[in-house]
Length: 61
Image 1: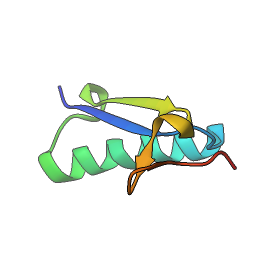
Image 2: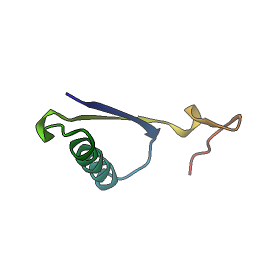
Image 3: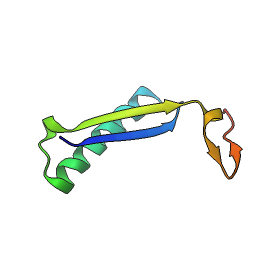
Image 4: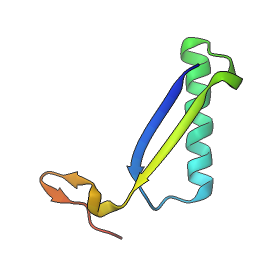
């Protein structure tokens, strides 16, 4: 059973997250032949101030 974990900055719509889950699932099915019902996707959202880029916390939009 493939488990795909994604950590990303919060703020995307439900529709965007659903599209990501769908595309990642399809990629696992295509790339490794995993049965679609066996693919698990976990999205972890973090606040921007908990995500650093080039030594600085990302700013909230």
